[in-house]
Length: 152
Image (cartoon, rainbow, N blue to C red; front, side, top):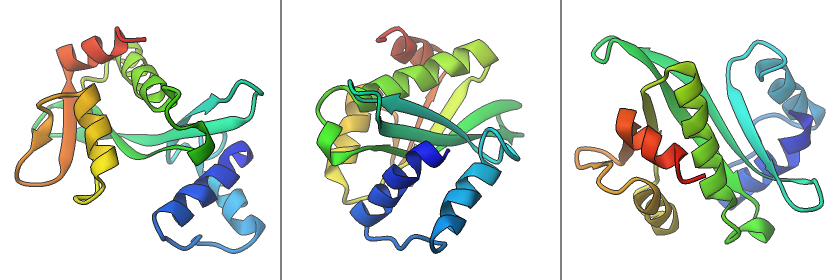
């Protein structure tokens, strides 16, 4: 996870959020909590043509009693400013949908900031009609995951 620490810092700066830990403590926390550590989260990473990390999708699985099954909550998806417009965000979402299919996960939930119109446009392009009026949440399930996975 040290590969994406710089990208996570870039994302935090983009959204005007401070880095929660100073120095290498932040990198250490990403490593400790990530896939090679406690697995508090999972992460997909997409590289640019030079093999450098250009984007990531950080998520965790959740169980929902009302759904009687596992889902994924996509907490963070980010593509570096230099790599935007190349389809990497879509590639991350497609890979996430494909992983859901492999693991039998039938739901993906995520949120978008109300005024982040770029993010909302991106999500609407990927999952039309997934917006829920009572909150800025997006969700795709079952056939919608299959449809997104097939776009790869």
